[in-house]
Image (cartoon, rainbow, N blue to C red):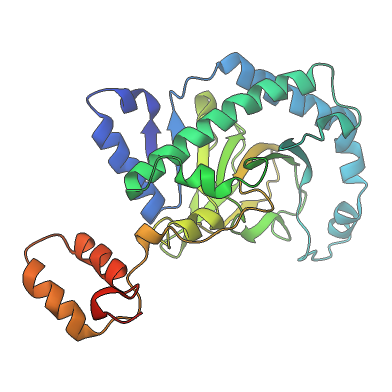
Length: 306
């Protein structure tokens, strides 16, 4: 079983329909996928990873191994309510906090800002493609995510350090992501990320050649009326390696009002007799069109019940 992979270079050519099918299936049946050939300079990606690693080694590594979490594990305690990770969160949109984060390496802010500008373009491209596959207006997800100042964007920067007792603790406990579209630039050597697929944990391999891993958050599941799924995932602790994770979240703004796309909802509150009346005249047409007609009629016109 292989992770669905969307080749962005095929979205502009004769293989577009096939690429769109792969994306739709991944969103419906997996909740995660990976993308390649997405047009971002690999040197920028490598520089982001190098600066994150540098910041961890110079400022966070020593304090992590002296933390309460590490001490619990050294004492063979079972810290079931904590995660074996060293992380911090950068807010980008609508306002940034990057200049408030202490001890960042020289060039970190400028490089990350360039990277995030590309990630936002990529997230919005994916949002548009998802909308196209769902039969929605291209901007539906972006518009739904936009509060007064547009969607919210932030990045969780994490290292999952070498763990002396990986059987006692998770790198990150099982969860789904609360937000929208998550773009992950991860380690190219150390594994650990796992997603639940058909009741079994599916291991996500390290990302070679800066392949971006994407997963769907809870709000896309709500907007799509359950068509596209957010999926449980976790990070396993590793005894031999320290794993890098740079996850950018393209999320609704705090004041965004989330509701399923009306076009994807089934019609509500009608009698079966009313449905049969319509069905008799439209039996050999698409049921989706029939459902849309029922939704309109159920609003109160022509004697149908609201």
